[in-house]
Length: 361
Image (cartoon, rainbow, N blue to C red; front, side):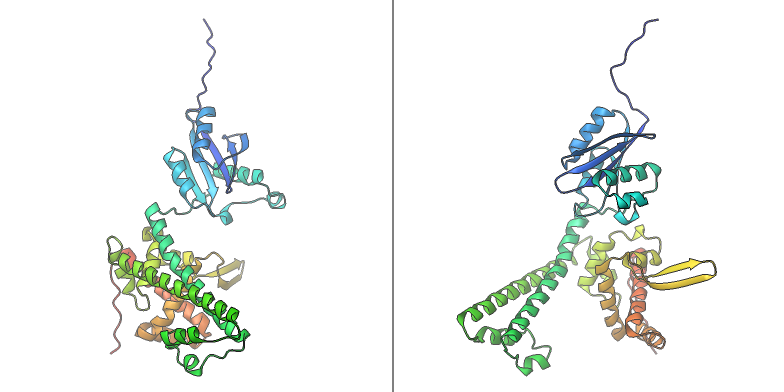
C-alpha cells in the first residue's frame, strides 16, 4: 500500500475563534482553536486582510470573530459578515475579565481575552442597526450637538458682556420671549464697547451663534420632512400621539429604538433607557438604590423632559404626579412619570396603535 503525503490543509468542521482589539491605525488579533492559542499578531485595520489570513492558514474552517463597540462603529461588523465570518459586537462592560487582566492590560491581553470568551460562549452581541438607520440616527443626533453648541455660544456672549461690565437691559431679562429675539440681537449688534477689538470679538461671537441657529433651523426642517415620509411617518405618528412627545422627540425615539421587537417588554425597554433602579439582594436583605449606570443618556433626558410636559396636558399623568409628590421630591416623581411614558411608547410601537388620552368627567 502506497502512502501519499498531503500538502493541502483542511480545517473543515473545525471552529476558529478570533478576538480583535480595534484601534485607529492597527488591530491586535488573537486566533484560537477549540483547544489552543494558534496565533497572536498585529495588522492593518482592514477586514479583507484578516479574512485572507484566515482562509490561507485555516481553510475550510468556521470562522467566528468579536470586537468591542466603540469609536469604530459597525462598518467592521458589516465587512466581516459580508466576507463570511460570523461576527458579533460586544459591550466592553460585558466582557468577563480576570483580576490579572485588570492589573496587566495590553492589546495582546485584550484580544486574547475576547477570543477566549467568544470560544466559551459567554459573550452576547449587542444589537446592530442597519446602515440606513445608523445614517439617519447620525442626522437626528446632530440636532442635540447643535443645541449644545448654541447654548455654549449664548453663554460665551453673556460672559463677554459681564466681563466688560455691560448690563443687559431689564426688558430682555424679564421677558423670556424677548431673550435672543431679533430685537435683542439688534441691540447686541449696535452695542459699542470701549475699543474696536472688543466690538470685533462680540461680532464674531454673534456670527457663530447666528450660524448655529440657521443650522438648527435646517436640522428641524429635515426632521419634519422625515416625519412625512414612509416608512418613518407611521412610527413617528404613533409616538407623537403620546402626550408630552413631539415630532423631534418621536423621531429620536424611532431611530434609537429602531426595532421594538428586540425588547421583550416595557421593563426591558426601560432598562435600556435607564429608568429602572439598581437592586442589591442577599439573604434577608433586599435593597433598591438609584438608577442603573447602564444608560442611554439621550433617551433618558428626552423622556424626562417630555414627562414635565405630560403632567401639564395629560390628566392621568397629572394625577399620578400629584400622588408621587406626596411621598417623594419632584426629581424622583418626574422620573416615575417618565417610566410611565416608556410603557406608552412600548405599547404604541409594539401594537401599532395611537395613544388615546383619558378624559376626566
